[in-house]
Image 1 (spheres, one colour):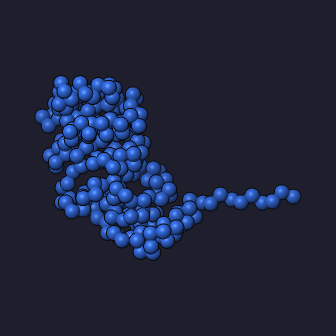
Image 2 (cartoon, one colour):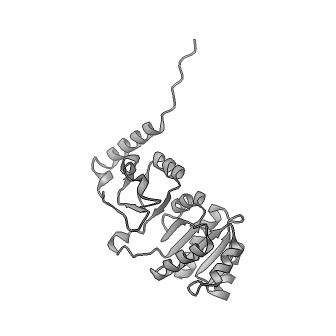
Length: 224
């Protein structure tokens, strides 16, 4: 007779184990040293916690489409799965954002299809950037970018599956100086020749990793 095989732990069991282990490692109360939450804008929930679990979000799922957490916040696998299934965009805030007004804007705004937003947010955790799902309508996207600049933002990466329509819409805005970038190697020439505040990318030609590399490189060159 073959011995019974151990069943793989469920998502809920993993969630519970992760929470207990982290709380013991950090101290029984450390996981919630900062425990407030607020809604800085419609459809956005901001959590000031060091550890984000399903329990923290259970009563709020119907109130937000964007979740903003601290740069060093730990997010359990169960939360990541739930965010993905519900189409919620995850962003990580600048460390000093709690000391500034709610009108604070990240220096760089990255607009990308929903499937990539959370991956980009994680890979750019150390950058003063916010990753959001781009509106499906190009004119709505242009308005969102203009609002970003009005609130103090400096630059935008716009990943679009309609790059030519995006470029045409951007050209009609007085706030945007937009350039369609074909490849990473063209960044230096684009900034020298046009000094853009918006880079439009054809999402079919840019992987999540290449967009992240572009964001880092452009941020460094802008800060130089």
